[in-house]
Amino acid sequence: MGKTSYVIALGSNRRHHKHGAPAKIISAALETLGKRGVEVIDRAPVFHTTAVGPAGRRFANSAALLRFGKNPSKLLELLKTVERDFGRRRGRRWGPRVIDLDIILWSGGMWIDRDLAVPHPGFRSRRFVLDPVNAIAADWRDPVTDLHVRHLKSRLWRTRPVDRRQSAA
Image (tube, rainbow, N blue to C red):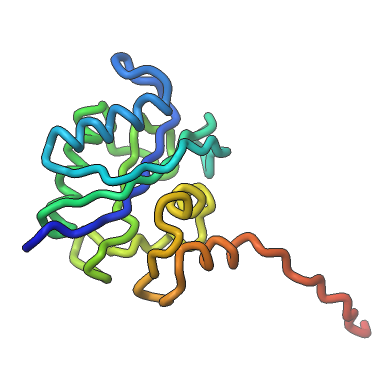
C-alpha cells in the first residue's frame, strides 16, 4: 500500500508534566508521530473551545493532515500508543484528557472494522472538530455525504429562519 492521506483531530485539556499546557501537548504529539513514521503535511492552528460534557476545563483543539503508509487500523494503533505514552488513560467518556487523537478522514474513503469507523461518525456535528479540519482541508469531501468540509461547517453553523407560524390551540 502506498502512502495515503489522513486528517486527524487532536485535543487536550490537561497539562503534561513534560510538555506543559494543552497547546504544547498537541505540538509534542505531532512531533512524536513524525518520529514514528508519520509525515505531518499540515496542521491547523489551535482553537480553544468550551468542554463538552463533564471534562470541565477548556480544550485546545487542532487537526493535522498526515501521510502514512499503512491502513487506518494501523494508524489507530499508533495513535492509541502515542496517547498512552502521553499518559492518557481510558476512563469516563467526555472526561478530561492529556491528549485525544482521532482519525477523521482517510483518502481511501470509508473504513469500518470492529474498532474503527472512518470517517469519524461524529465529526459532522462537532464544531471543535470542523473548525480545525476546515482550516487545513476545506476541500476534502466527506465520502458519506459527498459534501466538502467547508460545506459541512457552513451547514452546522448557518442560521435557520424561525418558524413564526403558531398553532391554533
